[in-house]
Image (cartoon, rainbow, N blue to C red; front, side, top):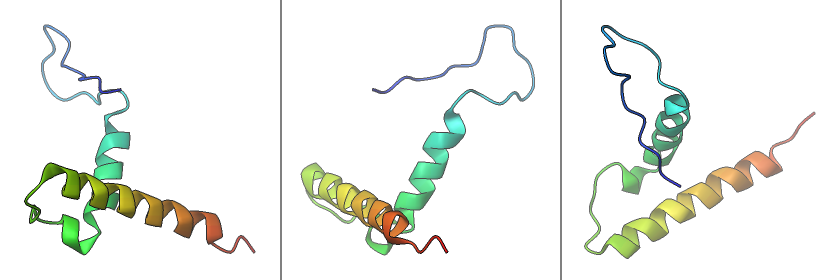
Length: 68
């Protein structure tokens, strides 16, 4: 589910928006994959497949990391 968080009306200056850091952190992890740094893919489904592949790779690395 995608929910866009907008600035509250009448707000001036900087204020941290809720949950935005989670999205930014996830995007930074995904762009660490060298092929996803630039948009080289011709079809959107190819780019989507590479994002899924990268997410799977990240999760398997975390699951198999030695905890001791």
